[in-house]
Amino acid sequence: MGSRKGSFGVNYDYSFKVLLIGDYAVGKSFLLLSFISNCQQFPHELSPTIGVDFKIKLLTTAGKRLKLTIWDTEMMILKNLDWN
Image (cartoon, rainbow, N blue to C red; front, top):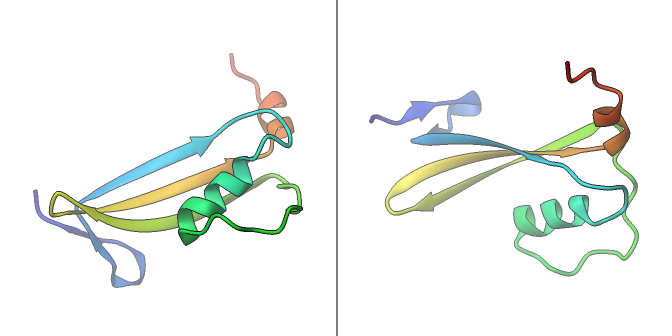
């Protein structure tokens, strides 16, 4: 499989979209920020997510370039969706 060229001229072999779902104030945003920035020390208080937020991270593993698009959701948004 050849590499794909995404926005801003970034090349990647695979693209994954990840949706973080969980109860209110359990640390979804902290987990996302820790993973994206490779840091484990953030302020104890983060602003609550309003609606959705997303971050993109590029990784290389086993010689393949991966593009991760990770969505951080607010639980109330998901509760209001019609799942039928």
